[in-house]
Image (cartoon, rainbow, N blue to C red; front, side, top):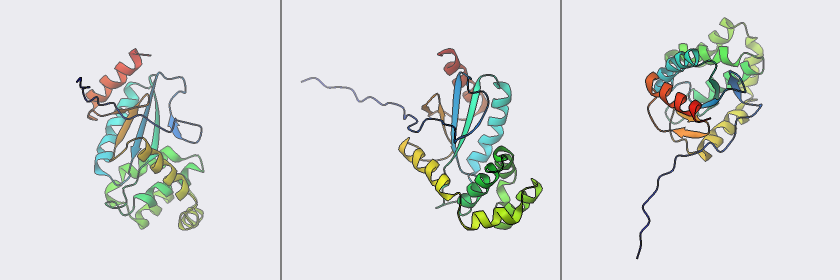
Length: 185
């Protein structure tokens, strides 16, 4: 009787990056970095600062995509923050709101979110009405379901060229993973 050793394979990104995703960087970049994140997750907040450095250091190498994965059972305003980001996106301001949310992560609540809307010069009454009617909730849920199907079970979760990065997210670890992925292209 022969036995086959148990083989662990890395989870893969099931939903490919497409035109509806929030991306920055060149479409022809050799590395696609996808993050599933939650605006109230403290680990995502720490990773955000690292990602800004990573994207600055490898700006010609990486196309970055952010997808929502709100963990509402532990972060009560995560859905609301994601919907605000989507409302900003509908006005071409996704990454400005994205950065604002992480910069103000510790004080996210409905009132503070509207402060961010005002600070970014977005129409607060319109956004409040859209978010109140959950106009963007389907979009947030679509990201979440795609994450579950891709093996996301916590935040932040990163995919590099379609393969889940199961290492850490310290700058040196991400730089190494990105460089290895770029060299293999």
